[in-house]
Image (tube, rainbow, N blue to C red; front, side):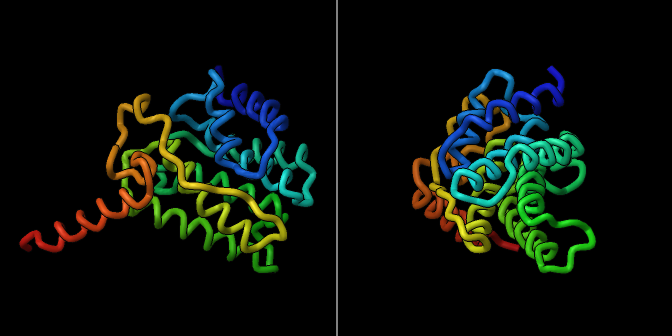
Length: 206
């Protein structure tokens, strides 16, 4: 199945989803047999999940038109761009969704151009600290976390988000396990492990 065919199925199926939590929407579609553990279909799925959650939360948007635009932008993003271009497709997909909500373009002067850059910068910085190799599910969760924070602070809608344990580790041959904040049972356990790792690095002789 081609990426374009997968994208069309994503758009068709995601329109039926309810709720204001983009992670829940993402996970329901990610269980479909046409969604791979990794792949450029996530460049459509991630942003589409945010758009549908935004619409369901009362956002003023033509969801059919918005999803068509998102699919068009997502299909322009090549696979493996995280490693080859130094920017994550999941984060870029959410950035595209925000630009669609705001009607932002390269000549926009209303502040949204810079706001979206701050979103992608914050999300990319967080992902960069975790390091690779890529995981399209982990990267999506980082993108959603920052995307929900952005939406809730910039628009008159409230999206839901909660930190959830990863369901895909056994399917991912390159899973980084304890280094991933979604591999652990809870965020507190992850933070304790990170603090111990930081202390160990500080004690390492130069």
